[in-house]
Length: 597
Image 1 (cartoon, rainbow, N blue to C red):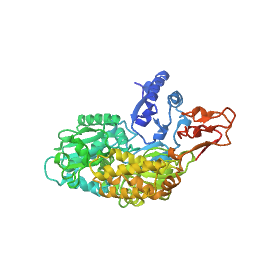
Image 2: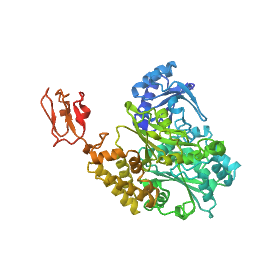
Image 3: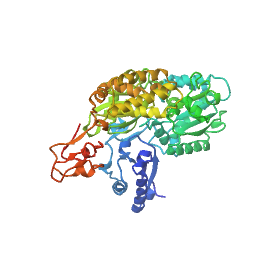
Image 4: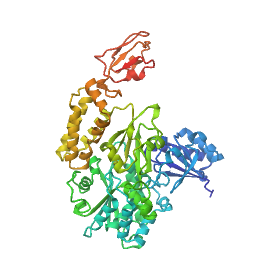
């Protein structure tokens, strides 16, 4: 049998699949067959490496050569030049320098990876998520073996406490303390839950982590079950994440076959199993008590606390709930030690944090950085800055429950306390970059519309308060704002934060309050001048044709309502009674003949 000369790793994450990575795989198989290289090249699939803006991504070994932005048409050149004659195709290679970190070496973009430290995502983009042998080759399930053979449950909890790990789902509660509370509860029946109900707009951290490395979540949950004395784990995940579900199902089956799940795991007296429960996509089910109600078969609605789930959770039994990223950190902490993990980050926020970097930034994707890294480093060093020479305007952290921070906060270190002091939150890790072409009033309206729609309706402050806020913001963006609207929004927001039942309502006003605090002048312009400086709120815009018009007729041809009149080579005019302010004429004109005011 011919010796394998090259190993190809092809990204099989949703972003790359959307950009036709499946077709690239087919083209690769076809070209290898054509060139007689089929037996000399092995092809492997991986999860997301994080560089979503540069996908589809292919890594060729030996040499760790990373190719990006591939199309099917690039495949013959790669096969002919690189795989046949060992000459990498320079125009397709991402970066030129080697990068080393604790877990792997990669030949790629140092600007993107240089300030990252991958712990939770250590295997994503490196291993085949559907092959347990790949996971085992990178110390997979060694932490579980260590816990079962060398440590008591109390020692496992002590190690997690020593690490300083805080829950990565948003609240930042110390993980070790939560484990300790649950472990101390009496009774033979306890549960472990993985909260994979990620639903923030623009967030894809947990989904990508599962798609890229499901076994690390499973291993973390088994260790958690051993530590608190539970025999059953449940992964609660949205049904709208089919690829993540598929890989979880395969990983759970493989873990059972290899003796990591089931009775007497690894020859010990500890028995434990995991099942998957699908959620219907309710944002409120990210809140732990609403999630528990959903698993029990009831409507996903939060309940007052205490009692906390650690005391009375699923079916009234003590329940340990952590999110995907939190579980993914557990095996590393046990292998490398809580003290090592605690040495990363800041005094109060230990370890690393995964973010979904989205919005108006060049390098959108999945990043993991040590706590204490500044917002500026993420946006401009890792993210590559703002595309199209636009100016940075704000960054929103924490998803729809977070705040929008302007340029003056760019040097804020990322940790729970610093972000809260600046007027935002860590959240689960959504991070949206906003440029000068965005309207902050309209952005606030978008997020309050989302949270209002996702409110379970149980408590009046959230149900009615967010609705009133949405009505006011809609009125302002439609040019019907009134004096006193800003103050009403502030009063409503403060009331909702103080009196809502759960975290959804308590944080829902954050985008509105933070934009009022940092961009109050835009609210005032909308209300008093009937002006949207970003040109986003169409009701506040007007379009006219100026003297630059050459009569080419381009604007007339694209107008969907025939509001533009004029003959060829003569100045045209816009009938304001017909104009729907869609902006098509403004975007089409090549002579700057359309004035937008």
